[in-house]
Image 1 (cartoon, rainbow, N blue to C red):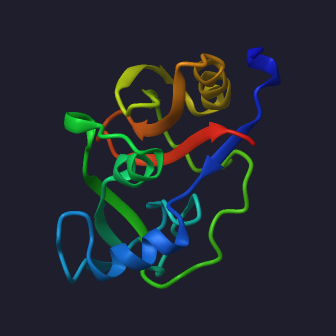
Image 2: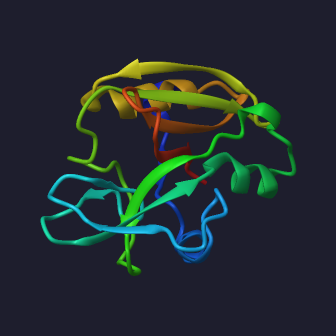
Amino acid sequence: MNTTDTTLDVRAVPAETLAELRRLDDSGRCHPVTVTEGAGAPLRCCLTRARAGERVVLLSYAPLRRWAEAAGCDPGAYLETGPVFVHADPCEGFEGGWPDGFHGGQRVVRAYSKDGRILGGRVGEPDELPKLAAELLADPEIAVVHVRAVEYGCFMHEVRRAA
């Protein structure tokens, strides 16, 4: 697969997963913390940034867990749980494409094999991320990539090859 021909399928946290997480997050908390954020928190439900006064929830999410269950693999020690901000109530979700204006700093695009093992990654600035994801997904050994914040390691969104 040629890197320039790779079509990306960018995925926010799915609505059905968000419904589960709002009841019981991946750290087992029944009552995720609801905060009113100032502008700027990256929302993983719709891949936008929170506007001043919006109600958002900070909850724990293990993004590789659900992918691994669907793929029928066990990622073992690579199963990470971390904090993500989402709207406190269901929103319209993510429309698709690359989330322009969502990434505010350096990110790591981390590659996973079909058995859920990390195969490496690349660090880049926001404008480089689509190219880095496409380059990684051009490798047939790579099944999925996660984009994560460099400074905190937080999951931002998933990227797969488009069907």
